[in-house]
View 1 (cartoon, rainbow, N blue to C red):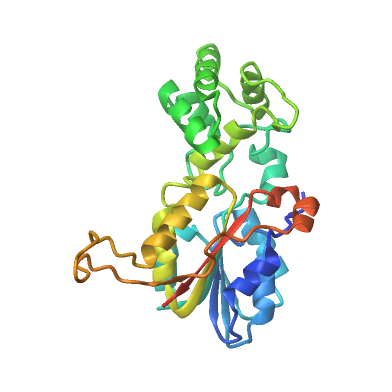
View 2 (cartoon, rainbow, N blue to C red):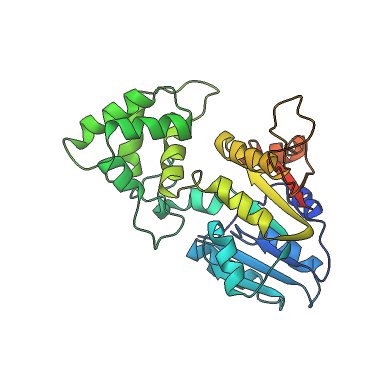
Length: 308
């Protein structure tokens, strides 16, 4: 299957980075190299683009699509390890970092990856296939309480407890192996309603987030990215989920060094230190035209931070 993925808010992300021709930039979620190719086109031979992705198939595609660029270094790793990656490259600071936290269209549509509730496949959902935890293990090994918690928090699914209970009932009879089995279980609890999307959408999202640990380390990853910027460098983060956006927003707010001293003190004693400024007081949203052309952009939010 061809790796098709339409980059979300491409123009806004590139403009947000304020690219310098000789700068060093990181695309921490390279995917099909849509954003990466734009960045590579705007830097000189003296500049450098570091592309990171944990999906080996994405790495292969990106290498092919960026093969004509001499100023690109591609790394199979997780953007959560940004500090370690840069340290191993002997890079002390970069001029811009882009994180597109969405799942690529290719991953969602590729049948054998198990991300989609629209086709039958083995339950997998790993972005990095070298990791051990899969969707099958989450569905078949997690306790009812833990499943309900994940489905509620990561999927914002109001029927989370009932879905978790049905999963337990089913797996007591036999192991749940495929996406189709899981969809059928969910549909006994959540019925199709006009305008609410597929009944399994929220549960599949929740399990995917759990399998790939997409939320828990995000706050610290954002802080690490800001710490890795040179003065004047920018961090652009695209989120597609309220929990992602909240983690990014909190990390940005904490990084501007807000004073937490009680009102009335003659001077600051909390030691608040600013790392920079938030460029987007409110997140940027896709244009109406983009949302019409690419339905997967509808939940996107772009936040930008500039290092002091």
